[in-house]
Image (cartoon, rainbow, N blue to C red):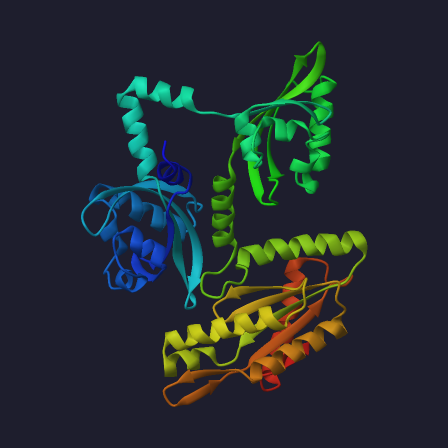
Length: 415
């Protein structure tokens, strides 16, 4: 198989679109290019993204949209037959998720091109001999080691880690240098479980390090074998680096807001739960800050939603620049944000909020009638004996936010 063919097989094309009732609200250029359009702007001129879905799949798409938006069905992954601008048939995996766009819920869809895989499956099914040749010709990495001292490896395994040949790997006293340090403990545990007979076969995904320092992700199948009369461990490895990178990209898309690149509400909620449990376990403090952009509706009404989007983006980049390492901020919804401050006392959290408020007051967005200034109001809360859950912590921060607004906005307050 050529390098280009291999790349097609392991690195599917993906793009993102956001729509409401199938009317496109946002798309990236990858999505547009996939369907034969020059840029995302072309997608936004479409009356409906249903134009890109094969007619026989329209009912399936509409039913999935209605059920997910109404809460009857959870977001998930579905396969569809699509049609590009030139009328060519495409097969895609659509991963949907509910997001918020300009203050209202909308559907975010990540599409992954499966056309090559579908065509390959069709070809293999129609030609059993070709299927067998493809399977028999695939080469997996094989390693035999005794307590991580390499005894044997094939060329494919050596190549996975960037070694010129098998001998270049086998001269090493230990293969632990090819395993990322954070996976050493689990590697020891797995090897012990095999050698002592606690398990016969172990399947594991592991992070490896090539000799040039780059990362390789592997799917491993380990079992014991007899080598020169002694018990050893045989590892069969498949390079899944491209699949892992794609998985990380998709997870990023699911956890980060498309417009602001900040954490999503779901990701913030999970992070708050995690930090709260950690704070309770270690008797640490924890604060959270609810942030609201003042008069945001007026900004949209007077200047258009595109200016409102610029305000949101400018605020987000400012937060990422001025906040401390270890602080977390996400888009809670619309023009509201949540700031998570682990191991931070209430007084310090209030100072951080006041500093952020002052920084934002210096920002401007260019509009037709001159630079537009905006401000934020911030409500600060900390956990305590009385405030011991995420729900109560957010409620306390919300009370503080209303106090800040009652003071005239553009300031920070505690309840």
